Length: 38
Image (cartoon, rainbow, N blue to C red; front, side, top):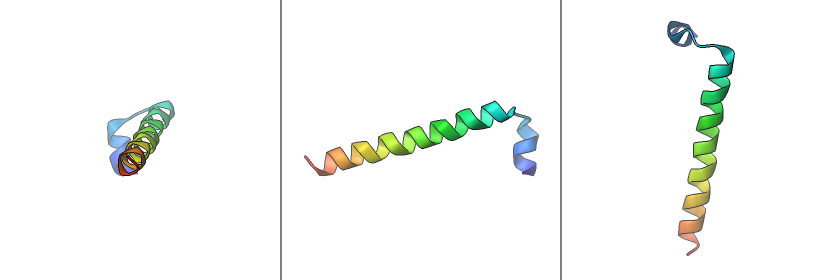
């Protein structure tokens, strides 16, 4: 938590970052799945 407080981001910023990470994981999974099923 100390590391997060150093950046001094608003809670919405954390939500945006988490959503971005989840989006990247989902898109990455879809790409890998599609690639393996070619």
